Picture 1: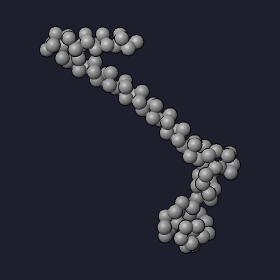
Picture 2 (picture 1 turned 90 degrees about the vertical axis):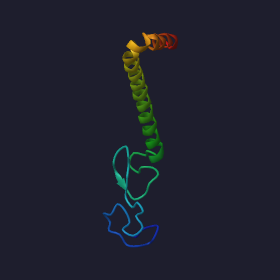
Picture 3 (picture 1 turned 180 degrees about the vertical axis):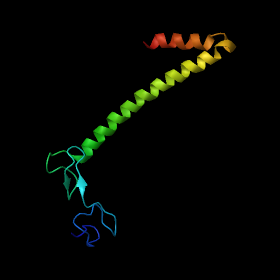
Picture 4 (picture 1 turned 45 degrees about the vertical axis):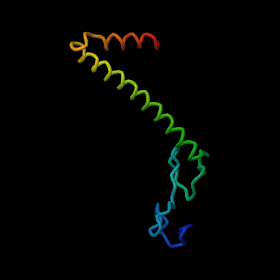
Length: 102
């Protein structure tokens, strides 16, 4: 096969051009079928960019939830450790602000 970018020869099984490293073999992210062009899958019709951007948004939302949980947990532990020094004031303040958010 010939590379569409640099026109050098590559084997039919090559995923990338050996000279310019252009992608020659694309894999559908949904059904994992392989094809010679990107964009949309010939087998299932999925648009590669839309599918991958949807997956990125889901992963981003999951990480934000995990991050907010870890922030709350670290705040609780910090306030618990400060309890003897500020007589519970920071702990009480966080509990009170948590009640307002709910």
